[in-house]
Length: 96
Image 1 (spheres, rainbow, N blue to C red):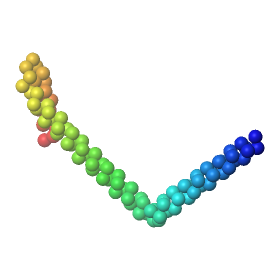
Image 2: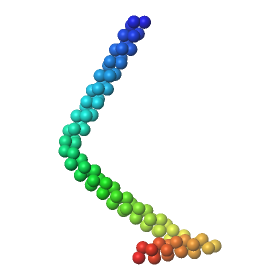
Image 3: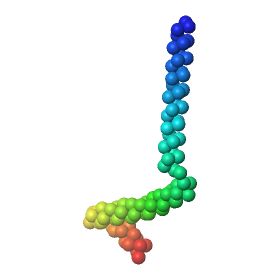
């Protein structure tokens, strides 16, 4: 019973020291890369702007692809082609 308790205690001590060492390494890496707080803010600001611009460009490409695919189906009979054509006409009049 004492050996079992000793093993558990030893295992807990080893795990705690490993956890502390990992935490210390992560903190050192963080402070090495982020020494200047203003630089971190500037990088996050630029990152946000680039994310916004990328989202707008990506949305534009997706809408253009959808419009291109829909334009292939304008010749479908039964009123569906006319409906798709009206959607495309509405998209073209709104954009200009």
